[in-house]
Image (cartoon, rainbow, N blue to C red; front, side, top):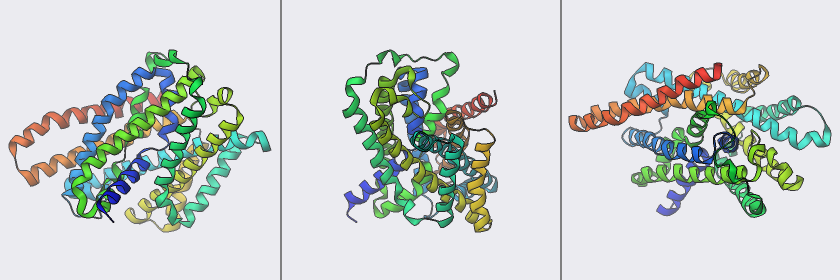
Length: 381
């Protein structure tokens, strides 16, 4: 594969992985805290995420190939690191799968209830059953779904900007409609939406002899994803304003009409369903390969635990995204920082560089820890 083609493929794959279900959560949050506050969060969190991803990229580059986060954590932090990495991975994947069931069920119910009747719970069950069947079958093509999702997200943006540009009048939403209690709301959701660390080792392997471009690809992918999100936030919030719905699309109905909304719901349904299957397959493999649980039982746990949580009442899409981002990815980020510190200490043995690193890593760890603590308190309340 030519150099430029290989680089573009790695870039598109990483962007397609980063841009996910957070796409649908951010406009509602922006309607609460305001566009300026969201922009401020992006300006702070985007560099933070890039730094942590660069740390993990350096770990991946300077360690043997074909390893993933738990194995890296075991090499640099010992068995406890592997256990924490596995626990955070399982927590995060279950949370993401739950988020897809919530949002996918909403898209499906909004599409089909006007035609066939029924309840949102029924369509969430239908969505889950079809996804569980595909996860059981282990559909191989799902591994390439990142590109399809990115194409669909691009189409959604084009439809909104070219089909509804004249409707973007709600500039009062620059300040938002919520109160002081909502000011922390963007943190976990944006962290979740920009995170793509799990794919960095695979991206490094894709590049082969071009591994020197890994950091540029990581930075570019996160920045491109942030721009995607901001364009979508502005489009949705400036059209629907205070009527912005929790999944972004349904609230546009009275402004864009049934035809456009049906198209957007179909796109949203395809994106969430394929990603739900991809997450389910990944979670199944964690139980199967890493925890040595039988294949069928791994499938059952991967599929039914998120759905059981849904039935228990964990159906607040925004809260789930925030919890996964702040807690699951916060812990993952702390592990990556600690691994990078160990790498610098063992392979460089440069006291001056290690000293400079202290002034960077401890503030990062403090931010992530505060996010974990606050989100747990916020979720419980």
